Length: 355
Image (spheres, helix red, strand yellow):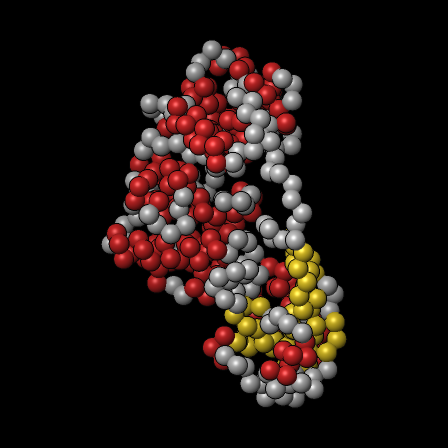
């Protein structure tokens, strides 16, 4: 519990700044830098992803792509392979396109003004503000999911923040609360408060610097704010995935750039016999593998993998550039979705036994 008695009479922003300096996070790997490239990378990775998960990815990604020019010149395959397992793969594709735009439109110098940033691929208003704040101290408001929760609780806004009118009101509120100075500490404080104190399920109100005038706390029901997204039945999809193996190799197909797992390598989808016939392996023996369920934002995918030994066949892919033989021993270097990688890694003992 934090001693916050001395903060109770200060304005909202001053309380948050003082709290952040004493109790906030100061050792994250993307802090203590003015490099907009590193700040941008962390902001994109942190979208819908926990800090604990991002830490390792961020460090490894920077080692592989230390600057925007290196990232722009890299192949999408290399980027997706480094991103594999982090999810929401459109972020990686947008990251690549944005880096290319920075090189082509800004001579390789990452912009730091919000308007220039929002013109780049994959950068919205809140992300642009965070980059501008931390790279050059620009006075700009952020409004990510955590900040929406903090503001909705503080003002007891009993609405779903994703509604357009509510979001517009929250933007106006966020702008009105900006301090004239110390914008970096204030912005980081908002992020830290939402991530570590004003959490979704068990808010630590006793450690909150703005609890003295928090309307939701005064009502005794902070977790009732904000109102959750209206519940809708999540559609379910069922698909066969045909895992074609020849010894210690597996044949994968690149998925279309648009759609689920865009640009990643995965086993082909479809009825097994139809897939095998299209590849010239209609007689291959198949056996089912354990089913996998994977949740996406808008639906749940039920994957039924089927293993097919195609060692005896000379395959004829319809679109050869979209297909790639991959050694089971080198799966970690392949840009494949996390559930697919887990499925393929599980085949290694069987491949080794066959040898």
